[in-house]
Length: 349
Image (cartoon, rainbow, N blue to C red):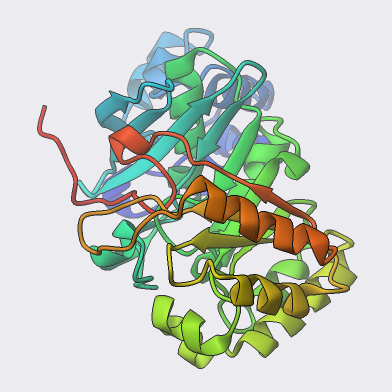
């Protein structure tokens, strides 16, 4: 039986539940089963924030159930970059702040979602890791980010990337539940969802067992173990060879290729020998390399490589038969680009 009370009880909010679970719950509230379908439509189709606002429900029940948590967060602050990317600071029920980013183009609306408050991975080039780790996000807190962007843009979300704050594979249970909810309840195709990870021993294998049709993006950022450990401290416990072996298992189990993300840092990992090493690692792999010129943060003095250097690295991979593309991040001017998200940059409004 589904039990849902208010937030103070510590029990599960409505957001993130399936239509069957919502139907079961309304029946525990002495309401007819068809109200479960209505509740599902208002939660996911209209983004309702309170049961009191569901006008098709009886007034008396709306009033008596007004304390039930839907699971929506509040927008603490929003900022717009020149390219129309919007960064949202969302305040959770426990007053922690997370960031999510809406990235519109002519044909699509992509949401970059967070999976944790902060991040424990402490990657040297990433602002989020500089602020430390607080906790995992619950399923409803992940789904809410997508509904918030959809509501704000007044446009249906088409793509989702788990590339915001946090390491998704430390929060596999809630991330998988959120993917399933976004797919089945909101209607976003799994192949339009990307989950990014720096690699946690055993967790790519665990993710593969769910047999999702998402895109797995592995943040590689280096062509050898020594350099990767310098950039990603956690890589010391996860040798590059073992990470790649687990990625190959993922391809075998799911039939989906792996995307390898590689942030280019001027003079550090963007030299011709690094391109040759990377090509050697990935030759024969069912994969795609996504090169990302570094997005600056205040805490470190890494530099973005020149466009010529990026082009040379790209061409070297292509010449070696490696599928590759370059991603210039959106929202750079508002600290909304890849590697720039942090919970500490809060604006009081």
